[in-house]
Amino acid sequence: SPIGTTTGQETVIVNLTSNTRTLIATYATNSGVPNATNLPSGNWAWVNHFSIATNTDVAVDVELYKYTIGGVSTLLGTTNIDTESMSTGVIKEFFTDLFLGQTALISTDRLYCQIYAEFTTGGGNHDITFYTEGTSNYSYAQTTFNAPSGTSGTSGLNGTSGTSGTNGTSG
Image 1: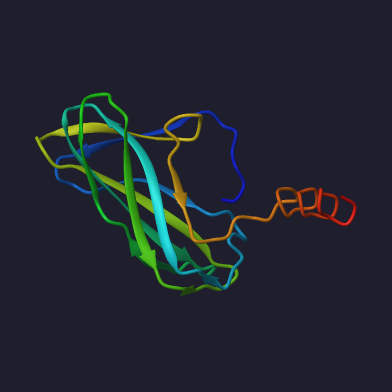
Image 2 (image 1 turned 45 degrees about the horizontal axis):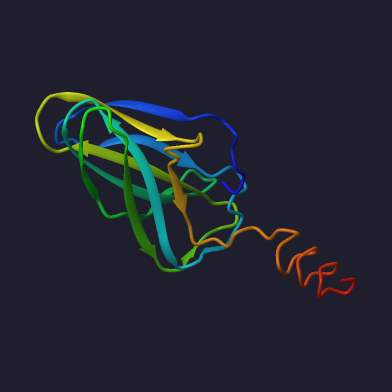
């Protein structure tokens, strides 16, 4: 979402079975977002934070979908798999990305991603914790959308070359 949040840290805890790729969380855009007719081509990246209650290797990947108001989901791409060696209770960052060519949308389409994880060494079941929000361990996605325009900065209404900046019409 282009709208930031001010909530504290959020966690999702899921029990994983060894060598089983498991859905951890799904995140979707708000209704009416992105309100675009295409996704610009480029690299989409996710930075995700996890801890697990054992010493093991954890593999993480993300799937990106578009979703129509008619209820049809279309897989747009799947990231690389990032595998990290984990120690009990230690939070680690996972870096995944995918390249998308320009992709057609309908202006009412929404986007959502599904974050998956599995542990690949040892057996049994273990709880994995996904972290987001807050001031540390903030998991996020980086997209190919342009950032919203602001009203200040070097070329905004009050920037150095804006309408009232040092080089602007009243500067």
